[in-house]
Length: 378
Image (cartoon, rainbow, N blue to C red):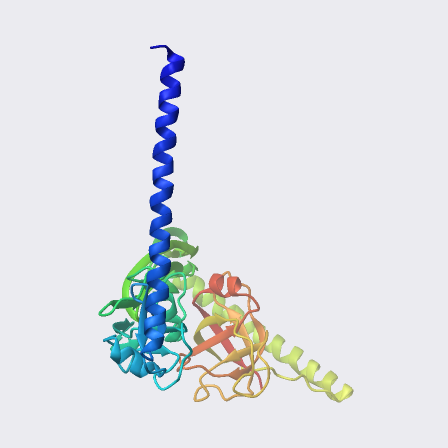
């Protein structure tokens, strides 16, 4: 048999099969039309009407019939189970038209652990994201939820949210200084003097604290470094020869001889002052208080009512009354503060303590803590 003959036979056979398939499809369509029309016809004869019921949980659509047009009766007659907490549209007591769709959305019981709170909630939401919105919960990028927001909400589901926050913290600590002793023959043996006053350094530590539902769970070290280096104290110890007693007596005699001359000069000076009718004002009686000084740069209104600024210092009012004019001198290499007014107080400023205002935080850190002489101006 030639190839052409085989092709002809196969073509004829395929045509017969195709005609048979078309015939059976036509018969099936005809039966469906007749059956559907008959069902609809019979239903109408006996007073039944057809309705569509959509169950949201499984997304199926049921074709049911009922003599009643009330939603509640239609569901009951067709044994459609529902709970009073379910969402039914239209409502149970509403009348519907034939072939109208009745939606039944089942309610779900959810265990909601919201931070430190926990409760059971009945909801008709279909998605987890819908439930979160329904509870008026706003999540940040750091918060943790145990389920996908896009997931379907299911009865008996547990949803847990942990709220995560971070807090920055900066601590300062003193760095102690060393005491260095140096001998000098320029200073009399048995005597000592402080050449450089010791100053504590400042160590800055930055941390980040992590809280979950307002409970501290971890602390992370960000950085640690010195913002001010300590200054070592240098003390000079005398090793030189003690002064001769005879030399000392000779100097006393010289002073006695100089006293009449000084008295004469003083009298002449007083005469000149009387002539000009002026008297020199004394700033202080020469007495001073050695006080421990710190520095601050907090801007605002002071305890005396004036604004803070350079020349406004904080004192203990029991030692120095507010409003007192002062002159502050350094006891070391730090530049003297100069004239000031006792204008403020502080919880840490007690007794012989004084707090000096500087305009910058860096200057305050550099100043640190040191001794000063405080003169009260009269």
